Image 1 (tube, rainbow, N blue to C red):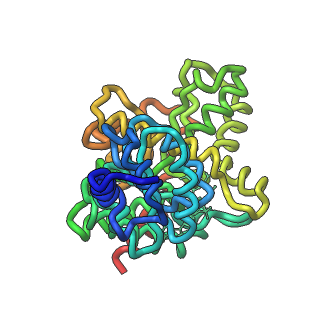
Image 2 (cartoon, protein in one colour; image 1 turned 30 degrees about the horizontal axis):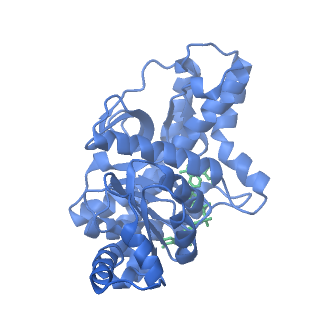
Image 3 (cartoon, rainbow, N blue to C red; image 1 turned 120 degrees about the horizontal axis):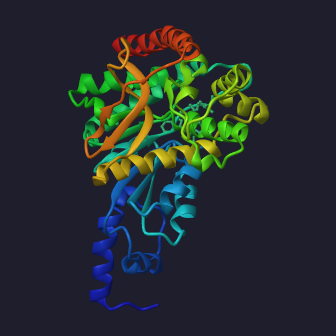
Length: 356
Ligand SMILES: NC(=O)c1ccc[n+]([C@@H]2O[C@H](COP(=O)([O-])OP(=O)(O)OC[C@H]3O[C@@H](n4cnc5c(N)ncnc54)[C@H](O)[C@@H]3O)[C@@H](O)[C@H]2O)c1
Ligand SMILES: O=C(O)C[C@H](O)C(=O)O
């Protein structure tokens, strides 16, 4: 195919803008021509996924490519991003997709981002707790957050990597050290607990899960996952047996998947769904939509602990309002004490790691 020299210059200009040399995947002039003429990516937010080639990262990337609020999607991982990027980039939706491979490309992946979603790190195998992932994932999260502090200090961060109860405090310490910490913009993703709670409660009530809203507070591991079944919408009541069954199933939903996968990892597909639901809420908040409320693990004064998951209102500044827990029944009050005890240790572990 022949192009006029004027057209070639235009292609080169736009291509250089979209794909600076150090970001370029292999491409030929026909491909550049296609990029030149492609529409999309005009209005919207710039989103990076760190750990984009993983079990969560890939379906998450696919779902974010469909999200009309996203104009630019950066996919970063230490392996396999060229393939994932090529694959996702063929989807005929508006977001422009760029791939970044390995630490030397981290800064380019992050520069200019509005929202950074982090599912990077190792998942559990049967018999492990989330805390068993600490030794590997703490360092990964620290490095990635150092990059965020340097390249997109105003971005909202959705942190998925486990143990969330410790990785969020680690991220906060990194940002404090860099002088960029905005507690409203650092959100630990506990949406999967809400998604599971809605599903399991709907099963018991015989309802459509889309009509059910269960607040889940505390943190994201075992007894720190505290569903407030007394506050379910639509209003309903449960027998003691149902309350115990539901609380136990919601708290152990992650382990249920880890055991079913039998060594092949933990929840990825439901997590990608939950991550996109949460990221979409963050983007709607950033856009200025009113009344966007979801649960998240954030810096908090709801309890005496420095971090706690509860309902938050998402706005232009991130988690602009953090809601109190509301009235708890006796069962939930006992659960809250257990949750706080375990959470205190996990939070401290994250803070101590960062201060070493
Ligand atoms: N918050 C939640 O509700 C929730 C739910 C499910 C899983 N998780 C956690 O999410 C994490 C990822 O799970 P997964 O199933 O996708 O694991 P995975 O192993 O399939 O994918 C992780 C990806 O992270 C990448 N990675 C590793 N080190 C990296 C680094 N330094 N920089 C960038 N990328 C890096 C890997 O190459 C891999 O592609 C785990 O820690 C898991 O426990 C959290
Ligand atoms: O259980 C895990 O290890 C992964 C995740 O935290 C989950 O809740 O599914």
